[in-house]
Image (cartoon, rainbow over all chains, first blue to last red; front, side, top):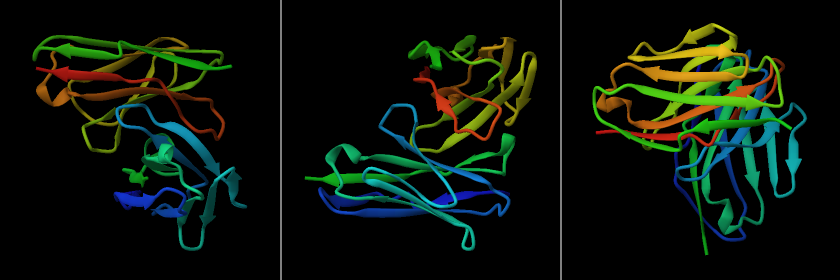
Length: 110
Length: 112
């Protein structure tokens, strides 16, 4: 079965720190990857797409490592508002090619 | 720009009652449409997806069904709800290229 695996956490991180977490995928044919953010009792919202060359958007950086089959998300200078669950998605396995991880719970502490 | 509307936002239904959740997308044509369910503290479970009018693929056998009567309308239904149907139901769309999903606001269903 094609899987996307994430450490569920929670990651407890002090405000201002840098935090990183990974997501591994089992389907080597996966071609597109995304990170979503989901706040409690809300819908997932697209945070960023992950390109082969990596992708940076302000304090957020996403990287893809095809050889080891994982993608990473780095958050610099973390804010209280970054507290959320971060979902990893890989396209290339599962129904219609989209497979979601179960998410990593991040808590930024003041 | 594209928008997705999903309603109702919350719903409390007794066991055995019917269900109808509706989702519409604006600003795009011929999207792929999806219904997901997220149980409390759990990951997203794909229920149905559709690549065109009248074309429905089911991922999980259960007492739910889906229909796509129009290009940008996706409906999730049940004739008789079970307690286990409680959860957070999310409609989503994406275009036919290699693009990410965009979710509606979701419907929180409680079956009592």
